[in-house]
Amino acid sequence: MPKGKKVIGCKWVFAKKDGSPDGTMRYKARLVVKGYAKREAIDYNMAVVKYSLYHILLALVAKYNYELD
Image 1: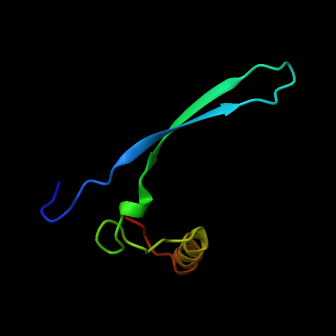
Image 2: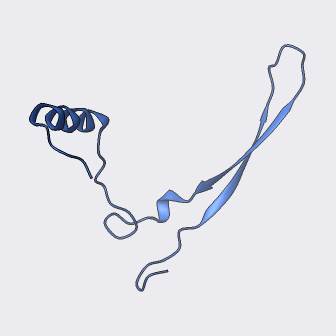
């Protein structure tokens, strides 16, 4: 871990799923992060790139014959 950073914990979530036509019970499990322990700009950044931006950039690259590295 980098200095000044903390590990964000996680926990297991278990669920029973029923309602299948043959009446069997399914058991599911997943590992989730404890999001309430995160601090903005310290543990994560809010910047998210949308796919539409990629389409615009690729269109400009194609139009002006730029090269992608």
